[in-house]
Image (tube, rainbow, N blue to C red; front, side):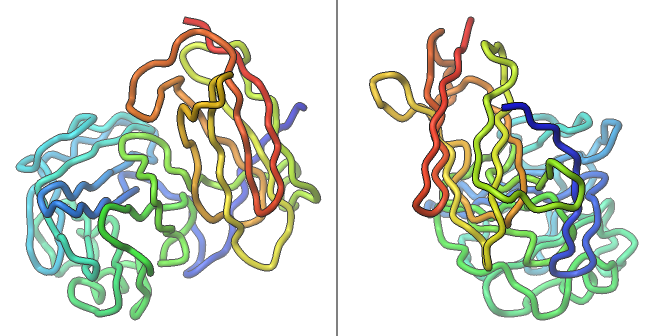
Amino acid sequence: ITMSFVLVVFSVGLMAQTPSGVKINEVFLSNSGDGDQVELKNFGTSEVDVSTWQLCSRFAYRSIGSLTVVSGQTTIPAGGFLVVSGFNWNNTSADLGLYVNSSFASSSAMRDFVQWGAAGIGRESVANSAGLWKTGEFVPGFSLDTSIEFDGNGVGSANWVTQSNPTLGAENGVVTSVADNAGQVPGEFRLAQNYPNPFNPSTKIGYAIPATESLTSVKLEVFNLLGQKISTLINAKQAPGSYSIEWDGRSINGSLVSSGIYIYRLSVANQVITKKMTFLK
């Protein structure tokens, strides 16, 4: 199946906008209390040094350069990720702001914001002034040992989804929607043949979710020929649209898989489609 993909911007929450620059892309809340992590993504076209930027949560502040780098580097290349730890919430009700400097009350210094739980306890008013959040909005359902992920569209709580399988350091399970024909919602559930195939080091998988009245639970998994699960690429709720996600040939534990044929399976509601792909080292 050949599918051409054209970016589509959906209006959800506040007025939708295509992300640019460095944004908060995922927040992981660890049950251990010392493993909370923040993923930043550079949506821009040139590298950005964020070592002197600041993270603010519940009026506690830390320079990104003082945090522990889990993956990536503090000079984030275009399209790249930085994952840091050491700013520990261990709290299912908090906020997180990203600033270019320590002017924490300044909307011009704030670059991104997200809050979860059910109580305004931080810099919500600054984010509202900056056009990055709406007062009284919270990402729901954030529990220990899960993450919340940005869907790549617009600003506000509607653009964040709880993820039970965190994707820190990689593309989120909830990806920016793309349509076969600009502005049109697909009329049928489908799964495209991955491209390239065979592949090394990575391949893209396209799929489509037809119109529904609400978000749909979507799971995209990779199995070997013995039926053993190798990786979960997506396990989230998504809106109708056509999507594309990349697999880098790595298993759940991060190791590169062996050369061979693999099955990728898309499950949406009560429908399942499978296809084969070949990885060559």
